[in-house]
Image (cartoon, rainbow, N blue to C red; front, side, top):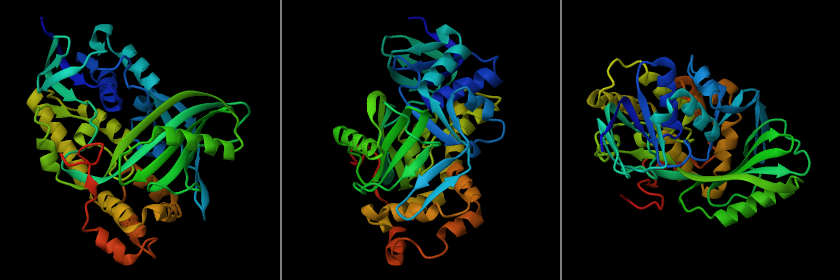
Length: 396
């Protein structure tokens, strides 16, 4: 078949790939961009949440296109502390991403329902035999694990519930750790989308990646019952297992890609090492790519490598905290680390989630009496955690 051609081809149109496509359409409209997604819909079936303070200056317009819900504050709940923080909180949806990308690109530039079988710096080959020739290719397909890295897992099941009566939540509950602590640090996350609609997610910071969906569904039902909520229906469900990075060999990780194409998102390890948040890095990287004057295959790969390597270097402090969380605290007592953290000043917490902690922030986080044994904390700094090469925790 005759190959299609473009300036930039993006393999995988989830959050990272979709934001690059939107940023290019807004800021580099002279470029022809083609996106390829194996699913029928762009973005799959996901919600992505973030704090307004996460975004760099000038990014609001890009994020607004995908945002479905906004709140002025959020709440956290722990056994010995609850707190409301006046930091605006936002949620994006895959449905909005799908609509926004389709509105921004010509119909022939959005290819869905077909697997990408091969990627090079200047081409994408599809399972149906088609090929796309491009000046540059960006591989934004998600990967289930991170070879040559180690740590733990953040895993979850979330359901959007329709209730028979109002739930009474005035704002998101980002962490409710007043639940039974099983399989690591467990908390419940609630997003009130309307008086009678709430998204409830059961989340774990766990050593293993196994996800028992029937068990988590029962736990969500039990949580709703304890709140006094009568559930009429479950409108939507999503689940996931995200890497929490404690250590790794970034250069070996990058070489393991082999394709030689530029990368974005999880495939470039562009996530917060401890929280697994991806929105801030996805937005920053998308905007950065629009400033490049040369998007050719080799140059684009070098640019993505340089950006990802810098992100890795900046994440050293957060990887150390991951080692302490997983290595120093007993699984059932990890909530104490987060409870103490949420007693710190609000600006510090905001900078932490944005991945912009200052030296003073880092000193404050580590100062004082630690919520874990000092000996265990020191010993954890020499550890790595379990391999993150695959979802079952096995080595690559």
